[in-house]
Image (tube, rainbow, N blue to C red; front, side, top):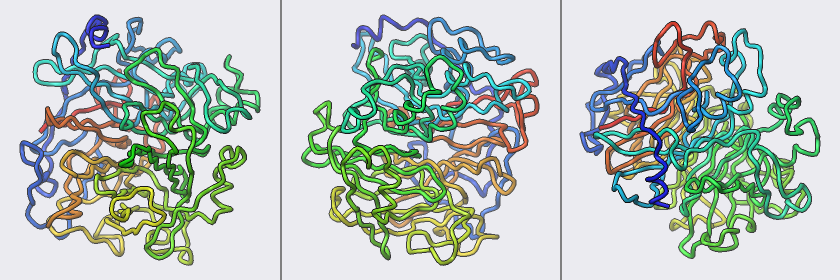
Length: 541
């Protein structure tokens, strides 16, 4: 594998930042040393908000580099980017319009000793109004923009760069052949064409990528006229699953794992028990969403470990989470949400990103739910009509992720401390945020929080924020990066050896009233002849 990776490097592309790296105001100075070790900033009782603008903002101590953008080449036959109009051939071979970052993993060393990483991303969306002239949809192209992306990176001249035509470079789209495994496969079929609407996922401890498919219904309707039979109602049960892929093997046929349940997923995180069994946590992509846990029956080294086990839904009582086991029959797995309701599962306020700490703490980002009324609040969903969100910390007893009960606490109630009630940030915090959506822990135990305000950034820009998870600065917030107007953060991943923090800047310019012709910004190029481009960035420092 290592030799093959070296032999298939077609050409190298280096994308320099080329943009303004404007310093943050002193109210947003990052609490980072050059080695990424936290230091405590001076106290600030009321951080000043910074409204989103056309360009991004990078904190002192970091350098922002561009890794890859919408339209950049991935495969050897990728045509030049020409979005007016975008063709299916471009869409299926270039970096897509929208993405969330699942993570990075290192392939086996190659003979040339150049450090390499494999980056894996989910591609959730392809809004016609932002992609196609006049907003006139082209389903054949849109279906190729969504799915998944695997990218070769290599470290050259002191920075990470992409590899055009790299050995593992791959797109998963509406036309990708997939296997279906697990208990429900006999009822719904063993194969299907397409990976649809994955919102997020993760890299597993055994080196595979887990893509959490979202709600397939809008895509099935949109793609009904394409060649993959999506107008056949029997296809619907074949979508909405966890899809597992081996990023190191470009010939690997993705596998949809039905034992983990069928429902629209926002995020996926997985760990392994001391005896080797995978434990998978999944959030339901809904303003009032469930939290699920799957405990595999067999060891992770078994290639079928995710095909049998116990699926459970979280139930809140006070500050206690009880995991209520669900039946393992096909009706439950195909109709998991109905089973969760029957089991009296509790709903969280738009649960999203999940991160698992080594000590067994589960961090859960909740974006906020304006639909929750005052009679249905509880210890872990504190606020009615919540537009701001929060971060939960759920503690497994003695670090046992298979335990039947966890204890929970609200780590951070998000929002502007000047305008939202009940907001408190740890003394010394130099920034604030709302609408947390993606989270990940770095090697220092710091939680990197990406926000998504759905384009409403008049009060403060969406960005990437760092939360301390222990010590005297526990839950202290610092600001690493603020995205341009209309953009959101789609996750973060880390390479500690090079002090590189990767992040996904999603759909810049896509405010609620924006269009292909009139985006709110044309970041990252800021050129009047280029559309805005979703971009993987690297913050180095």
